[in-house]
Image 1 (cartoon, one colour):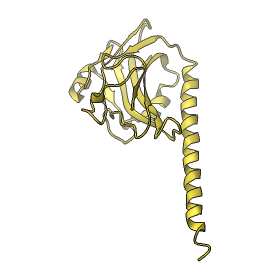
Image 2 (cartoon, one colour; image 1 turned 120 degrees about the horizontal axis):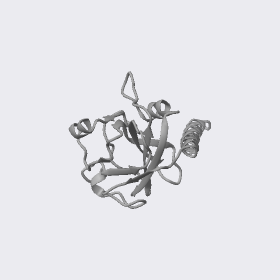
Image 3 (tube, one colour; image 1 turned 45 degrees about the vertical axis):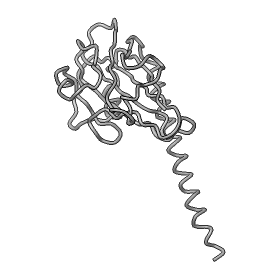
Image 4 (cartoon, rainbow, N blue to C red; image 1 turned 135 degrees about the vertical axis):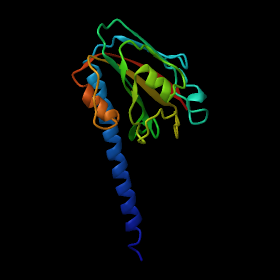
Length: 197
C-alpha cells in the first residue's frame, strides 16, 4: 500500500518529460526556421485589410467568430517570381509562456507570380481561380484554421515566400513538406504578425 504513490509520481514524471521534449522540439523548430530566414532577402511587404501589423486579429477570423481567413496583399520588386507560398503558424501553443507545438494554420502554394492578394474569407473556388493550392494544416485539413488560443495572447505569423519555380507533390503537402520543397528556390520573403487572445 505504501508503494502506491510510485505509480502516479512515475506517470507525472513521464508526462513532464514528454512535455519538456515537445517544448524543446518546438523551440528548435522555430529557431531553425528563423535561422533559414536570416539567409533570405526580406523583399516582400505583406499586409492585411483585416488587421494592422502587430495588431489584433478580428474575432471573425477566430473560432469565436465566423472562422474566416484574413485578407492578405503583398508588394515586391523581385523580378521573375514563378510562384508564392503562404504559411501561417502559431508558435505559442498552448501558451506563450511555455509553447510545446508549432501549429500550422494555413498552407498555400503555387500561387502564380502575377497574384498579389487574397480576399478575406477566400473560398475554394476563389483560390482555384487565383491558381493557388491549399495544403494541409496541423490537423490535416486543407483549409484555413481559425485562431483559437487556449491560453494567453498568441502571435500568428503569416509568411509569404517568392519562388523561382512551381512546386510538385505526389500527395497533398503539409508545412514541413513545403519548407523542404522550397529549399534552394526562395528568392524573397515577407511576414506579417497578428495577435489574438
